[in-house]
Image (cartoon, rainbow, N blue to C red; front, top):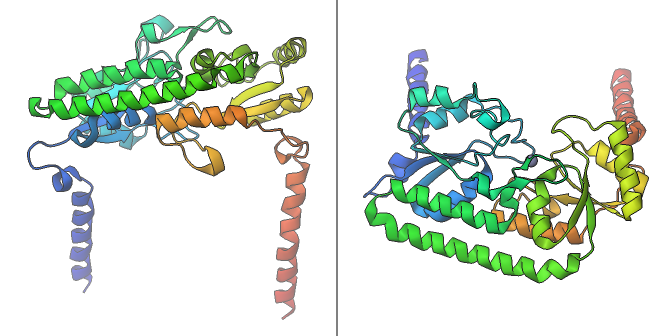
Length: 349
Ligand SMILES: [Zn+2]
């Protein structure tokens, strides 16, 4: 009996490993799908829209609260890259620091690129962004790498996705790819028209941002960023800098802060209370929560959500537990009292 269940177990393991290679089961009969890994969910969306049925996709970052600027890949990320035909990455400094350094930021050593190419030297690497798609951020004095937040730059990125795929697909699939590409560009053009229709609404709007992710979208919409809270990513801003931001907001009559869910919220909530400002909860990456806690899974939904968020800023409540700490403590104690009573009751019986 024991031996029998051992073989059953082996058979189950075989089943589970064989079903984890779906392209053998679901691939079209003529050509196998191209196995593609993308660094972020945003690129997964771009490649899916252009590649359609010709591609099979995995993303390293599923995002949500994961931070691309500090992410470290898991073993399964590395395995996916070793088994992939193509890897699409954004490719600007600081966006995929785990992959490899950039000569221009002095971290050309290390990274997983060398390790993965040792095991998979056929891997085709497509860098979707280039220097011409980004600008120096006047608030920071350094390159602002979040170019995809402008749909005009997104269209250029999608063209690079298309050209990259065109080189790898079978010539017979070229028409299908071109059709997908043109359809997606047409959707982006509709999005751009929609944004342009909103531009006049933001005339004169001044904001302070926590992280510089929205520069390209705000430039497109005509929203003026007067200050940034984050001087360095993942480094708490100094009290002097926070005070300078408060003074600036007062002087410029600015009452709108822009943040995002994957950053330290205590700083922004406190600043909003101190300045009577409202907070726009923006989304610069896929996989983050949008309206009603629904995950945002496409680029177009993300941009549309940000327009909604600008129209629906949040006023932070004074009694929020994340600042004072005490309300959380009392809720915690309140929760313990009934448990204590139940415990006392059962001991008596
Ligand atoms: Zn960022």
